[in-house]
Image (cartoon, rainbow, N blue to C red):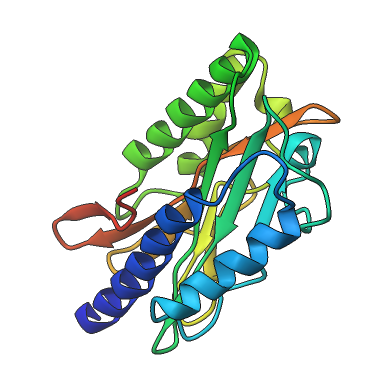
Length: 218
């Protein structure tokens, strides 16, 4: 329903505003745990009823774990920092992932980031009502696989989001579902190179009667 989309946009706006505020605190020497706790506090202060899920905030080699748990690991120069987060508002969830770099990064890291972004944009472009979830997954996977990076993509491309953080359909290669008008799904390709680094970029997309709408603005 239209009112539900408005509530999800509100949740997403709270999460994004909080992310931009948190970035001012992301510095060399800060720990994952410290920043994750601060993130949750900022989201609450900005009006979130509670986090959508346990905030994932990882740095350095920890970013290579798709769903790692924040630890006492400190941010260092040259690290990627991965944030997977969501706010809730009147029962509705948001979900977003951003990967940033601290200080000086390698050409390999930059190329890998650009590739994941290209894969995400391909997945978003493929998303429409009537499209098979598996085909939308494939559109993003093919971009990664062209550069032999498909093997490092270790989860589905997206999942339904609403009153639950994971609900309904799943954009995975084995899915038999099709997207329909009214669906809200994440589109979140990632690559995770063991003991090196990981990158994930995630937006929330709404399939409206007029086409797709990206709820993520940052």
